[in-house]
Image (cartoon, rainbow, N blue to C red; front, top):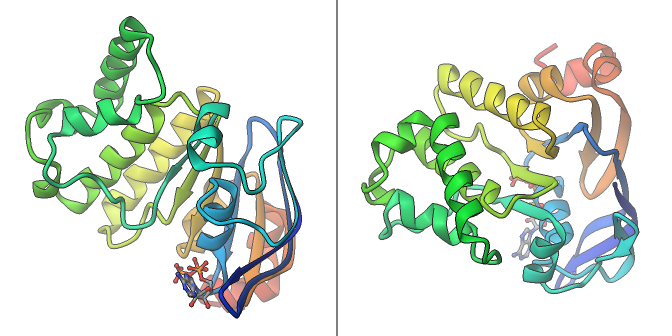
Length: 234
Ligand code: ATP
């Protein structure tokens, strides 16, 4: 579905991604794990069109999307939930969700999708008129995911959904990610919580300072001595 082929990405003089290749097959949950600053978010931002690769290719469903404008990439079926949620604080839950559907004009189906989101996230339904900035961290994460789903993505990019959440909520968020995947959305998940990420993913890549150092099935990586030592606390 998505092939990232040998991309190099820079922030000015900083060489953030050094020949990264990642393959995402339709139906999977693929996770990118690694320490702070390894380049995980940079990979997602490049796929979603917020950054341009200096070289290399990104092909989504047969189309080269590397360097394409972000809104065109959303229209092709890729949606990103950014790190730190970035909900529109001064808008209501409902308005945030409606904005997620800005590329669509099918009013009736948008309404149906809103109802589905409220079924999946009952806490958002109860708070539909509340200002997003006053939601708890977990609720904001749910809203950010709901907003991304409103564009009907076939590939969902999730950047550290567990960040700053209590363990019980982390579990809840991960089980929602699994459910979203099982209803047909392919997921590329960036996480620092390697334990949780490997427990739900099919495939995983380990990143260190802009390079992929290990990859394989999530099961294999969870069992690997190197991964256990570096990312799973021994
Ligand atoms: P984290 O989990 O801390 O977000 P990450 O693996 O997602 O880490 P990135 O955010 O992709 O890492 O950062 C990769 C490298 O690029 C880091 O060295 C970081 O300092 C650098 N970097 C990220 N954003 C910028 C920017 N806007 N300008 C300059 N350098 C940046």
